[in-house]
Image 1: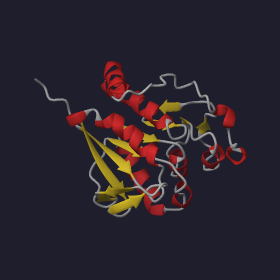
Image 2: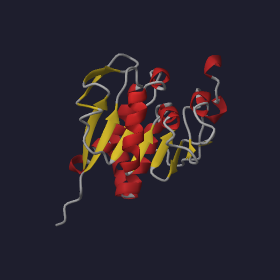
Image 3: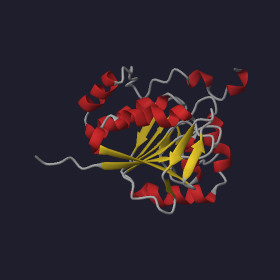
Image 4: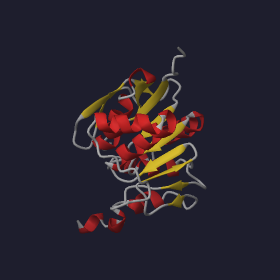
Length: 210
């Protein structure tokens, strides 16, 4: 029997990342078992605090990070200072072109846009804070109504929980629709399968009114 190649997914960490942005998709990819290896990566190795304070250990820094087939970039309130982090932006510019799929959740797309990686492509972001992403590049075809968007080797999702839907879509693309559906059942997750159906588009840039 031919062994299915193992892909390595790099989960990118930075201070005050959004917890579910990261762990929702990782739960789905983790269900692939031996067919996926998850590597945690940050500017410096060690514990990295999420927005609610829960820490995740980065086992690799940008310098010793192994080759990555998949990249997962969460958003969160920590996105704003990272927009000026040359080390992170350079890492993304260096690694994304070699990855099979680069994924962002929530405001993570603002970082990809800042790095110039989404120029000429369709992309989306958290609807409540959409202007944060849109202000990073006028060359991106920003989609104000989308649960997630796939454009070539990039997949960007709306806010927080939308990343889990995007992750299942990427799994369906790489491993087949049936596999993604089995994972949704295994995790007892109701998969929102329509990328264009965005119930939160009505809240575009309305974070201040909530």
